Image (cartoon, rainbow, N blue to C red):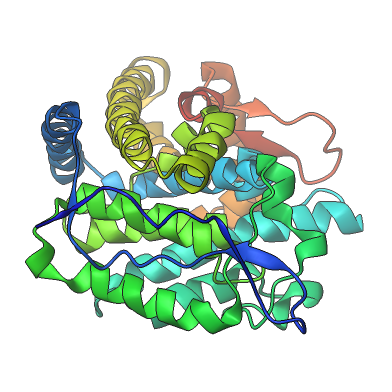
Amino acid sequence: MNDKLNMRNKGDFINQSHREGYKSTSSFLINRSFEWQDKQINIMLESCMHRLGELNAYCKYFKDIDTHLPMFTAIEVTASNMMEGIRSNMTQAFLPSASKGYRSLIAHKQVRNYINSIDWAVKELEKFPLTLHMVKETHRMLYADLPKEEETAGKLRMKFNAKDNKYQASSGSKYTPPSKHDLKILINDAKWFWRNESLELPYLIKMAISLCQFETILPFLDGNGRTARTLILLELLSLKFIEKPIFCLSAFFEKNRLEYYHRLNLIRSKNDVEQWIRFFITGMNDTATFCIERLDELQGLKDNYQEKIETKLGKKRHPSAKQLLHIFYSKPYLSVNEIKEEMQLSFQSANQLVKEFEEVGFIKEMAGARRNRVFYLWEYLAIFEM
């Protein structure tokens, strides 16, 4: 007989060794069958899978979709960082740090590292199945060239510093994760849970439980939330639910950040997983809708750009204008020098093209840059604002 959808037994805390010196939540195993009493979950699953299929169709038939993927990755990264209290914005994702100040450089590096880790993992999935090694490497890349964290990056934690619990600070919870003695067992259990086809669980349910488990056992000293949410994107790609990394679930979670942490705490305090699954599926459905709407708006804007090129620029300018727009789509902040290099133009020709783009209204100049002026594709960026 299948178990009810609960995660652990009563008795929230167990004492760990005196050497470790703290109490942690008792371990629970997820590689087992589940049932859920709320039949509304079945309806939600059906609706969500339909919406994911609709998004995947967009991915297949949207012209030059790969050109716009960096924008969706940037949404995911900035939202996920913000959930962890890391200051992030789209400018940091695409514009080299304008200041040489230490804080500015670190913030820029945190965003770029996150983007690089996702890009790397997506490419790896084209060659290899999703593995724990891939998850560790994705985590390691989050902290590349960040000396204070680099030593433990990509390594499962051997301890947990209860006095510096960032999770507690963000969620208001007094929860402390399992000790190192339980961690290996729990990670292996989670791996078998994901691969266990005999459970006959919908994959969206598996994703919900896996995310909850990752956020509960906190396998790394830091960066668990960001890695866990990246794992959802990788799972969607691995299962071919979507064929392109165009899903930015963290935008929904950031919008509902307090509810996100509250619902995770309900699992620990009241053993209520069904409420978390409903929340997760709602997030998946809303995110698919969000991405479809962004693509709709994007197509309308591209059509508008095309019309302006044909009606407001001379015929000789059409090819270079289309080429520059294509470059702006994946690099929405560019200087004249960068345009010169990308298009193999003289500085004078690049500057003239920029001037015409300004006059047509495609781009605006960023304030404050006296040298090497930077221009941005403002209506395009506005589509992706959260």
